[in-house]
Length: 474
Image (cartoon, rainbow, N blue to C red; front, side, top):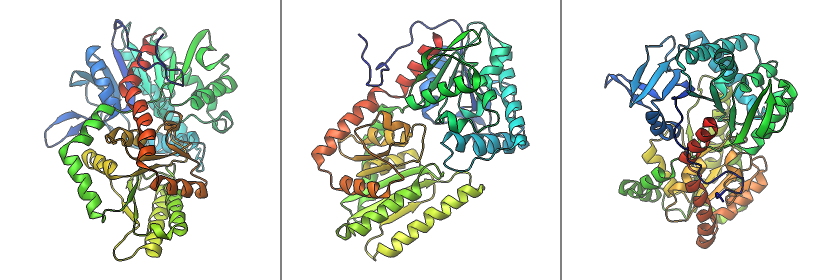
């Protein structure tokens, strides 16, 4: 009998003999970027690209997407054995389709509307047009036997449009962010159109069981589908919606964490901070979904309750800049920076700064050194599809120590249940858990971390790709 996780998915379902035909990946962005100094296209770093590169190379794969530059769509070209097929997006569409409907409407709505959702008719029309353009481009190049795999919330109409254009093509879709409950999703004026677009796929993958059930509910309520998630009936077709949580290349992170340069950098980081007994770390894109402000308030509460920890614990918060011109993001940045100043002003002293705040992205090798140096990783989003930072931290803890504090509203909480699971809205609970985390014995750390590492290693990004493609191949 095939080994399974406690969620019912197999430890590794290897794709059998390759099907005839290519794999066509469709995403908002191409997996390459232009390097003007080198004068060539180079593959962008990222887990999705890493996982799919060997499969795409084996299947003479194709990647359809936008170059990232408005009004720029060169002829198809090849990079590292993968054919790149650009789709143009006009400058005004970047504002309406991408910044508007994708990030102003869908993003907050799908994150349980934790911020007000902007709904504008003049954003919807470009979203339809761009999705139709992507589908038409795929239809132009698809061949009999090809498998098409569409990705994420920017392209939810593509499966439906593609089903109309090439009805016999096998189509998959994967949503990287949450799918909200039907009562929240139902606020959208175009709820039927979007769900019908998704139902154009044969197989739909989601990060969590909750997202699968939410989608199935919306499909029945607004799309006229029938049946359970694993066998939705729609317009004479059977559609599968399944839980396939994305992950990381665990071996890659483990190897980098063991590099001499990483170990040395982590040691020097601790020394530069005065060798505190506990370093707590947060690493997030500066987005209102990440709960950075509530996390800092919980740390502030801990310092208020435990004066004996003053001078002994340090919190490092790395906030990666995001959508800096958008007012909502400027507000959350201001709130976070005000909290950092307040905590350091109230508790800091000449020989100790409680919170170190870095408003920038870190190169991967430097980030892994921070993971190695941190005793407690604090991952407390208000809603997150998965959150790979939690898995990256676990993969780098090669000595078996370290504590993961994880929000129950992160998709990763379904898998990483040996973490300390918290409600990020409950400041008292979070402060109590942080207090427990900084005093946890090495033995208990190792017991919890061993289970976390087994999960991250077993269900890695290669497992994820294998599972998704096995379902897509049918």
